[in-house]
Length: 219
Length: 219
DNA sequence: AATTAATTTTAGATTTGTCTAAAAATAATT
DNA sequence: AATTATTTTTAGACAAATCTAAAATTAATT
Ligand SMILES: [Mn+2]
Ligand SMILES: [Mn+2]
Ligand SMILES: [Mn+2]
Ligand SMILES: [Mn+2]
Image 1: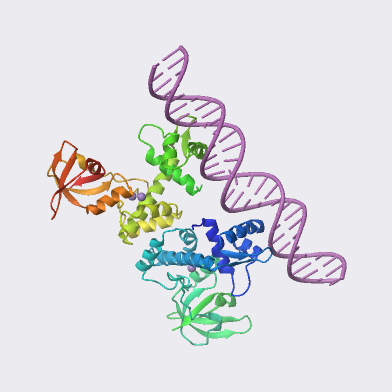
Image 2: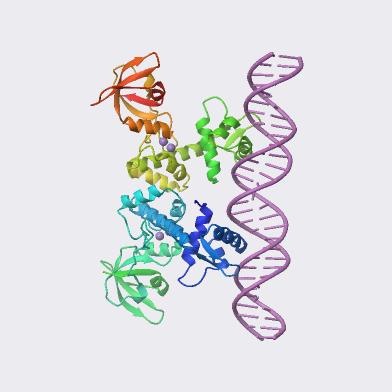
């Protein structure tokens, strides 16, 4: 069975919106995919026919085993290509998402496996997100939100909570990226801003919003 | 202006069918693209509207300057990706064409330029075909058909006349590939077969059809 | 030159994915 | 419980790309 790019994008979106419990609503999908609820309804009927998800009128959708498998394969390709773009082709980690949105639909299984091997079987993409292996298994990252990092505990930035251009612009300006070593020096309860220290730099404060968008792991 | 994958495939097909002189006929395009003449007519009208080619009823089509530019950009991507697959990912040169048919439609200009630089600006793809540079210029290969190679003149295989699986299977069996050094030892006028000698191997004969499908350059 | 053959175009239908507007179902408030 | 608001589905239309069958044009033969 093979699928169109549109179908694959729906499956991936459902995968990302799907929490452990509930089903994914028509409106949530429409928002995520920048389309209209009516279009989503049509597509859900079609994907149900293809056995990729369960769906009942007014009850939203939930991926089947098959659907999850497909979603993981697409996410795997997306993140492997992002890793390739940054690691091999020297892209900035803030300019790879759009390109990977296209590359994730290249169908060759052999290409994915060879690419994975060439890259040395990386387990996290340039944004700190885990890359599913060829069986769909992902490493679990022991990452913690920067806002929750204890004072003076050395840690390394390993992920971001969003891929928005605005966030990435701010991080670039502050010279913060994946791998940056830092410690939290002080927290201010007034606005929940925190003071951080990066090696060889003066310490400076960042906003609560920024701190919540950063994930770190202790080193 | 951006184009659909279908439109790009039409432009590339016209580019390959277009000789110095004549226009490309509707039927030739239909055959090349495995579609019907009626579909081709519809698309030619559309591509004319988009100024990618000139077309008059019953007179066939011919790429405009714009159309040629687009075609060269697609061919450039196709051949760069083929080179990447063989050179970097260790694909066999007989298994890359289908994958490149998909990769050639990835739109990022930056990706193409970075890939080109990473590969070291190769000028020929794994089949011996020239790779257009970023301005659309291709090196001219001084290749000659094996059937026309003079006796005892050392030469190197640098291209094939077709990408058919059948041909590639035969070449694999005979251990002939791009870069293989050989000389023609004898020609037989009865069936136009030729006897060739590869370094460290006993000489053997190959058919007229095979010799005509191989391009070599003297070394 | 007239007839036949081949090529190409039109006409009309189909599939996929989308949209708007209206109807139906569900959820939230009074 | 009844009303109102929100969400979701249906109905109908549209654009892109394709197809078959029939008509029109061009090319090849008698
Ligand atoms: Mn991404
Ligand atoms: Mn990512
Ligand atoms: Mn190819
Ligand atoms: Mn090639």
